[in-house]
Length: 76
Image 1 (cartoon, rainbow, N blue to C red):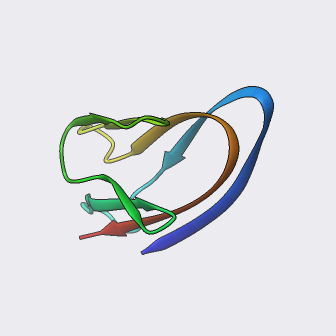
Image 2: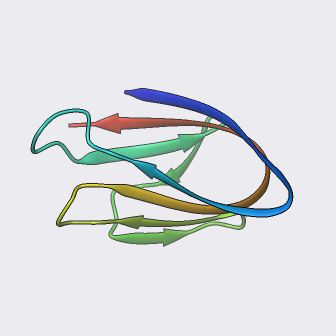
């Protein structure tokens, strides 16, 4: 897994890209502060996140607004 802590400034939006940890890997779960925010689907939205799984690259792309976040991505 990989863990990322970051702060997005007030009145800003961010696109966060998680690249696979090794060739051919795919993300099987994405967690933000102990809550699963992506449960192995191609596209998923929560109150604070829009999450896309890019099949060609294996990237997980998270779009979110301002705030403090702690993500953990699990790869298989």
